Length: 305
Image 1: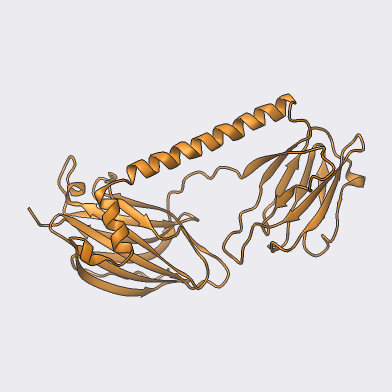
Image 2 (image 1 turned 180 degrees about the vertical axis):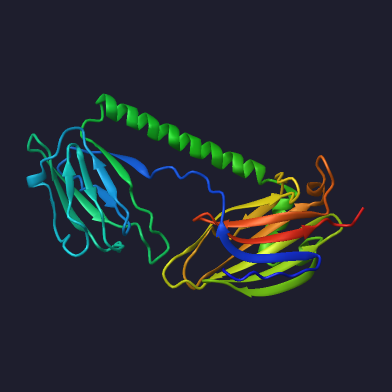
């Protein structure tokens, strides 16, 4: 949102869309291990509009005998060189779109693939950026790739378990109740609410307060007809020192499709306002998946003893 909206009271809110410090994106890379079984299906290759997908093979490809059926007007011409085949779709595909890609290796081996999309309506445009194709699971490179895949899955599971462990707190339970509208089961009292209309996003905001905690509930409606709104992260920081402070967050969903709504609830304990120095205000920043700052809220310290 280009306009700056300021509200001064116990809470100051600004709805913006400015560049944020973004985490480095890891490439979308995966491996395919082919089967010699006669009934095995052609592996899927997932693409997204205007994003290149590279298939890497164990031996050089034959450019003359590598082709994709029905690509005209939907893809740039295939790029085949060395051990790589590059696909560049001009527009998004739909899941029902299934194009046959036939890659012929230098030894004459023909490998079929189905080019399609993970996209369900407009909620998911994720495509493969690089696919490593292995014919022999026991080959050294295939074994190494399989090891990396296993380590990656193990890391994701550890991170998920750690996240659930950290979210097992009273404040997370309170945030979940607020998200469900069960305010009466919490110590909070409603304070104020606003309806803000941004660039492709409408946001309803309600603030809550108790003696020892502050809370905010966002209700986000995605007005963009073509793209999903995706949550990336929230940060609670001391505006004077930039120091991060703890808080509890609950999401209804991290991706909101066009026309749909989703909620985000945040609870901050009074202790978050005290670290090396006591501050009367903390800034809550909300980021969407592309790294843009969607909103920030300035919370004031609860006054209860």
